[in-house]
Image 1: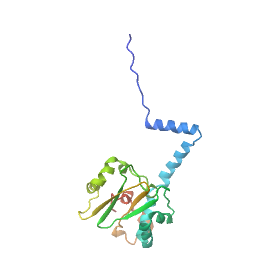
Image 2: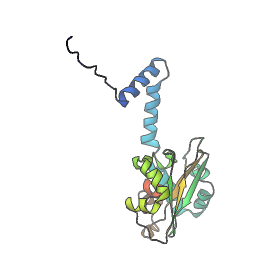
Image 3: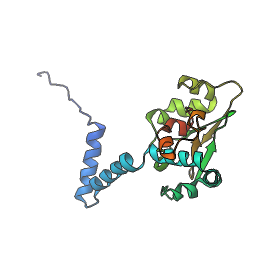
Image 4: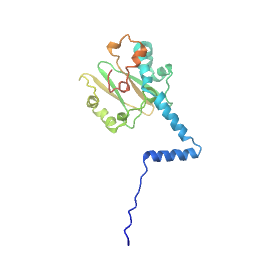
Length: 198
C-alpha cells in the first residue's frame, strides 16, 4: 500500500475564530461588527486615563470636591460629567498619604473603574501581578520601580463584583499652585492604580 500523507490539522487563529463568529452574528442581523466598532471607539476615545487625571486634579485644587470624592466617588465623578456602568455600584477613592500607599488589584480577573482610569494595562491582568501583589506587595512595587520606605504601610484593595477602586495620589509639593489643567498632565494611570507615586 502506498504511503499516505499524514492528515494535517490546521487550527485557526483566535482572530480568525472571532471574525467567523462576528460574521455569523452579522448575517443573523445582530450587528456584531457595529458593536465591536463602538466598543473600540469607547475604549480608545472615551475610557481613558485622562478622565481620572481630571478627577485627581480637581481633588487637589478643590477641598470640598475632595471631601465629596472620598465620601462618594461615583457621585463626585458624575459632577465632572463622568459615568460608570450600572454594575459598578460603588467607586471607592483611596487617598495616599506620606505613610500610606494604597494599591488596587482584581485577584479574580482584571476589573477596574475603566471608564474613569482607562482599560487595565496588560501587567494588571497578568496572574503574577494579581496573585503576588496581595502576598508580596512591597516586593512587587519595588520590581515595578516604586521603592517605599519601611515605615510606609501598603494597603492592597481587591475589586469586588460591584465595587471599583481608584487611588488618589499625593500631589507633588513642587506642583502646589499650578492650574488644574496643568495638573491633569502629570497624573498617570499607574499612580491611580497605586503602583507609582508622582
